[in-house]
Image (cartoon, rainbow, N blue to C red; front, side, top):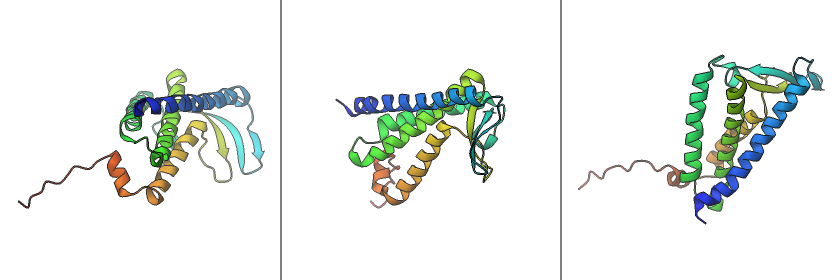
Length: 175
């Protein structure tokens, strides 16, 4: 079995499960929170509060559905390309493959909402720090970004990244 098929064998079911979990939590939020008072989990710290986000992260690009859809399609294409064609299947690169699946799943989870209902359902709210309301797909993207930064700083070496995205070779001018 070639490396692309191995990745599909892992990536497709993993992404499908993560996307399903995201969509299920949003379904539960719509049916349990919409038009209702927030559910306080920890007084003054954390609650479940329904929000229809018509923009992107932190409320930017409000009511800009088509630019967000186009951007998401481009990002998804890049993620799929890097996952299938650039990241090696060796054990050392397993974390990067997992990160790609997390990024993909998060982007698709919110993409589905934006396509189907013109907004993304958000429902987790940290009252203590007045953090923007977010959802499970946002958690996937945030965890993936955090892991990418940590692994880039402490685990992967320059040679590892060079294998994934080779830089253009400088021409030897000393002849």
